[in-house]
Length: 492
Image (cartoon, rainbow, N blue to C red; front, side, top):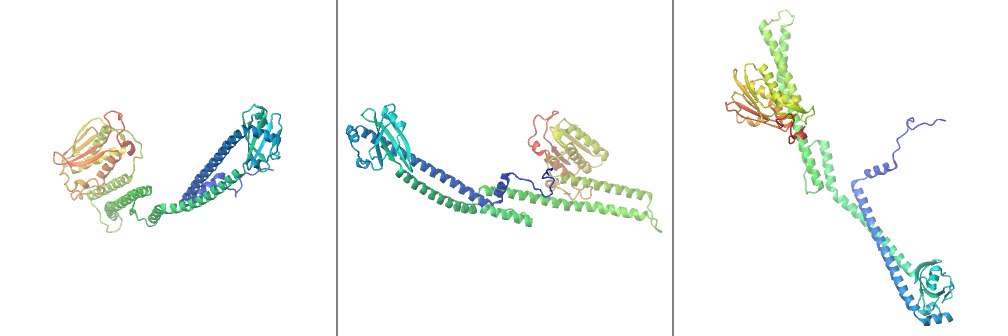
């Protein structure tokens, strides 16, 4: 008969550890109930420890007091020679000696014992015999007779070979301890119940800000209203609310940037797409075989095709810029040591091919940074393209790299003071640049690359009257940075 594993049975369910249900039960409970239960348990344990400590302390104190009293009474009685002589000849009840619940006996060294009240149910043993024989100075122990416990002490008497035994009943002490235990139990239960109600009330009132914050978060999840929440106080809940407000602010800013990027991208894409569609429609109509269709001169057709290629190139560049700007996160590509001076030389060579009528004067010093080579090269190319676009034909662009700072000076008209604060914004174009090609994303990409590499970029006035762009990245003049640039590791 073969056994079937639980995996072969379609209705089998995984067996959880025995503590898993208890843990899930605890997390299924509300925070207020957990606080109330924990406070009740804490108070219950505290009351139990206090009650047990009081009970043990009182018991030990009563025991100590009884032992001291027995020792004093036994030693005082044993010193009286008359008591020994009388009790050897006569039977005297213990109550007549003023002992009450005390039983008195004499034990000899041969083990024979004699109780004054003729009740010998209390059996004396070796400890008392040893005291009578003189081998022990005294003995003190507890003896049980039926349901009654006795505290028994034995001391030697002046008569050799005889010891005096006094047995004190512990019944009154037991009753006192029972009453004390009952009082501790009642008060402990009352304290636990009171602590339970108090803990529940404190939890309900103390967690009211948490419930209010939870309701606000749920409302934001339903309505997507990213308005910050009111914060009162300076406790943990207030800190949580402030952190949540910071998250809301960042989320709202991110959503606004996304909406603005989508709106601006749609606006910028519409122009080249419309022009491209118009040119394609014109080429289609001219190239149709329909009777009476007009034909374009060869030069006009070539010019139209060049225009289409330029628009496709502009559209491709715009899409690439949008993709680059959409990467609004730390560097995720391969980060390595980058030779900034080599990247600058490559960018200058590329822009020279694009703008053959512009001369470039380049001065570089070795500089090494930790970052993404492709992004840095794109930022340098955008800076040079911007300078070449604004420089007049036959003009000169001066490029210098010193201690990680790339300075690009052109001979253009310069940037108006009103436009300086906005030149690195996405899709921003001054009134003079609207007639020129471009989407207004090049300098925004430069600013983003600088920020992601813990650097900076700024625009100003060049000594020649044109524009000066200053692009700085942290690094070192050696092949490897001596130390990691401040903040660069976090950004990368």
